[in-house]
Image 1 (cartoon, rainbow, N blue to C red):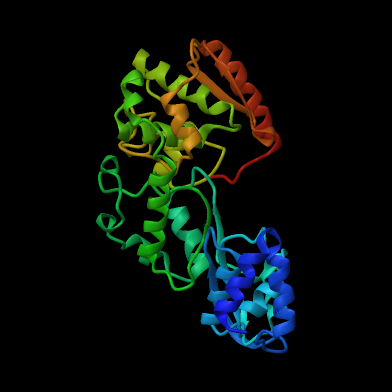
Image 2: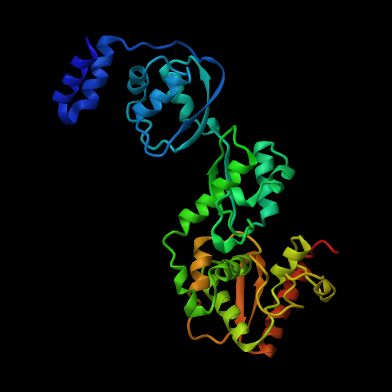
Length: 341
């Protein structure tokens, strides 16, 4: 049967086209390999691909012999197939290819970047996933990444957190550019013009969002911590966030003592007024929205993560109340000692 005849037949089948198509393939005997194949090849499934699109990708990669055989073997089983990269073998039977693509172990290069990560932590995570040295990420020219003007040439805060499918042949520059592009895409609908209402520039919005992200234990804490920042700035108080100090220190710990507050850095908000010179990590869109929409009406000036195990944060207006909350945290800390420095 000619290709034209196949198209005419499919058009005539209407809503039952798929079943007629597979029956036709059964009769015509679509070209197919046999067995499990050999070697290794990575293929990409792009968002929006139909089964036939995936089949064409596999034919081009010498995984399956024909699109028709792959579509026939897949049936409706690949309807929920996720975009990303899959490690398959060359010259597999269509049935073997479908079965392998449905195996989670076939997925390649999946990485989850948690909100609030420092750029250096993201470099380390990307390095472990790809084998690219951290030094390569550090050497990437920020001007090549398409950063927003508000970034002022710094990547910190603009590497968007989330799940990524990493191309197997990607360079450090391509991976960072992919994350910056994701930041721009995810924040496209956010009206940074609202910054006038909270007295922040677009750059400061991302900086506040990074502070909010770093301190929040639960989603509902994001706008509350944003309110604390606003209240402290209006009152002329130093922000004094441990998370900013830890960024200056480049250390993760819950045990920050007075001796650590002497670290010389513009990110040490115990020693410096106002906001830090830039973000202290990668905020989510929820944190950016919280920076633009702090909780209304509250006069909180303090907060304490009184139970980090439960991610519980409590808020205070007075210093006396703050000391009571701090005592709760000290009790938790005594029961959960941290590495000493």
